[in-house]
Length: 119
Image (cartoon, rainbow, N blue to C red):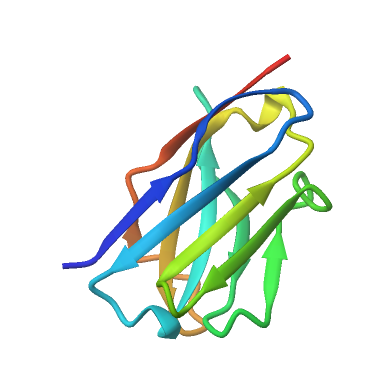
């Protein structure tokens, strides 16, 4: 059974930082690209960042470029999202997801972790 469990969310003031983690189990982690997505109240879920299975290649949304960094530790089956210079508009539930190989079909999702940025 595949499980993705996010942690690290919380309440932070604007300009602050948080580091999210997503621990994966039940899948061959090193064979999956990992993504972070977020959903704010009343809005659709949006892409935040993606990292390839090897960790060599990353992509991020324009809205977070220069502020958020995705990374992974394949030895620990964990993907991270370092979030700096947080803004109130970053407030959302953050989800991690897994896609096999180079696919963008994220078949596995975590339950999400709440990030709230106060102004």
